[in-house]
Image (cartoon, rainbow, N blue to C red; front, side):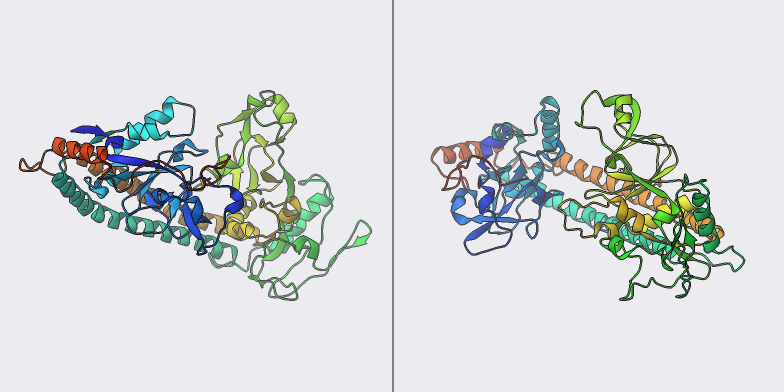
Length: 529
């Protein structure tokens, strides 16, 4: 029979507290508090990303009990509102104000209640509510009103047993697929590392040395060609530890190791390989040379029109290349389309770059991601452009930068917001192969990564198929089609009447009420994020 979530459970409000009382380490006077970020893939993360508040802020009601379903009721993202996780073991802790708990009566198998919140029936309700209103909140009344299919208690237990039997097999397959995903990621990383260390393809003694290529690039700059008249820096050729002296340029003698960034530039710069106490770079294969990004390109930073969203600047026809568009698809070196656009005024307030330009994100959590844009457009202040780089060097640089993304993100500049200023980007040192070897490297990387991408797509498709199967199992379970009915079971109507009677007498619930902690509410709910 049909009833509602509210007729079978109590909806408990989360703990409200001020940020000033929050601690990030446990203490006997504190209690851990879950937030929306602790709900992942229908499970509760109980060992990390916890905050701790004084025990006095938490009522007995707000202490989590085994079987409780924690629900995200408020978030800056609609996609997170309504996600749930069930507590399947004893755990000392509570939950923040941006969450609520559905605590089922003792007459309901708590696992049946928990699986309901993973099933398509519940997800469709949440999706409809999110589409119908322009808010990122789920009211407690909304949860209470959700229709709930109630079978007899004995059938609930049979349903749970059948669900767990089928999901155990399915989860084993999913675990294998995720392990394969991880192996493919490691292989991708290994290919890029080998490529940039000269171990992916064989060297050819007949190749023109990379030093000659670097001299041409620097010479073009000195003559005002190729790189718009920039003065050349010196060349550092380090082959097996050998360094070549500098040359006189513009009345000043270049340092013998001018290709290496200066000590001041090295502050925060990623180090390619281990630098020893003498600031020596690792030895390279025969014919290779160390070069800096500053020697190989002109580095310029993007710009963002302010204020953001102003129709004077945004909503036009000129592609607006954001960090989000550069990091959306990591499976290809190329950007071919964007979702956002700017006006002519926006273009004037930003930086326009031509098609076929190598870009690098340089700000925030997703910094260090390279991409070659095949469309012209404006770049914002979260990325830099490396101008005047030809193929195959452009693709080689792309793969090299992709190989050191983690290093770039580990740079510690003492700032709250990670950022690679243009000085740091220019100082990145590159192991530069001969031009002919670059072509061989790029071809081999593309061949191998093409196979990886195909396998990754197959694994991803199988994971999506597994999720559809999971939802199909749960859909059948809550439609009464997963296990046979038994006419000898006590009817669900009798169970519901008993629940109503128990609740009317103040018994039956594992914990009833929606009250706050003993200290009451503060002016601002800071318990979640």
